[in-house]
Image (cartoon, rainbow, N blue to C red):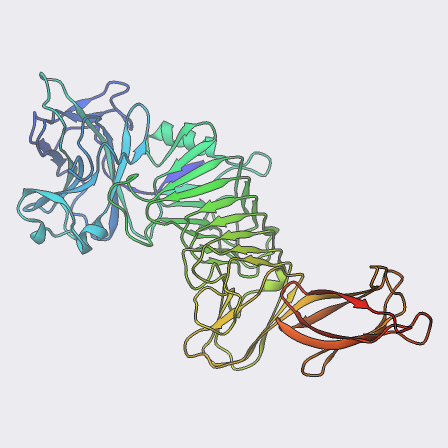
Length: 547
């Protein structure tokens, strides 16, 4: 099941209180001309700025920090830039139609040929933008004391005859920071699905989701899955779907930053399960915030989920019955906070946050997150480390791969793998095992601590003669330029190879030699002067016979 959490301003089932520029608004109860309830309000608008509105909105409303929604059927309007579709609000003296959509910015398409539109009033309070003053002045409009709400239009052509060409249905709102839709219900055996949610939307006429084709679903309002307070268990699952989170009117006026919210919410009593498999989530317009951090979630499982252009994403700590994110892809999202969630095989392609595609802090458990891949888009860091401790902090990572980042550390390019910021100037050590690429770092402004990146790589020395034949029994010695042994007099095997692991800062200059003992044939000693890089060291040494 699912629940519309918005407050109805007017259901548009009665024409009481409706006024307008065209013919007197009336009720139309014809199937196909209404979307919600028993009717819609119809009128006729022509090729001029015209509007209809009602004062029956449940009393005086403070909409100054709210998002208002309209259901409208009208396919003759002009473009958004020309004010084709306007959200109208008034305070009894001033009544303003704010441009919000048009024939090239269609909100959320619904059936039959309806569209849902929204206006974030907090945005027009801050920056009015384009509008039409139907009464009074925009500067004097008191958005905290709204007494009328309606719709305004500018049509491309004059209306012909006495036929209604605009049909307005339910108008509603929610305070910014609240949610428009709650998805709950389901059982462990039959979890709730998006097909169920879409069925509820059509049946109840909400205009918050659509299903234009196949397994594709659109989301138009802030949405939560689960139960914030003890009520009933909630199980949700989705597989092989494409979700579009529409943060504006599909090209029209955007809603405010931070006002498009998605979350998984739980409580200490009910069982809450949220499972996505092979789901693609694409955000358009204002970036959605996706909060999955609730510590009461029992099951949170994301497998092969791709997120594109999402805003800040927050995962929960390890715990519950099952919490994980595996084989997911994040394309140009804002910063992701993985917390202590077990993760494997995540890929981050670029980031919209220059500080880092992901965040580590004192609450992170990077050891629970293996085989992460970061591909730079030319700007920004892969990982932000933000601490406030004077003591040494050590991070251990396994199987990370980085590409496209600046390879020189301790500069100020803004495009190294790590951005290290420790307000208390404590030292930071990062131990990299099975890594691919150069794990460079940059210190944030003001941070004076020491950063050490130790990358465990493989060092292989192959010894051969001038004909390319392996030399068995050669003695190999190798040390850091500072004097620490890496290979201490090891002997080559039958394939002429000595191999070991090196866990230290890279690049690291090394020196050493290869010698052959008195056994025949005897070879001349050869010095080694090489460098261990981000991919380790693989050197072939050719020895010349001394006989």
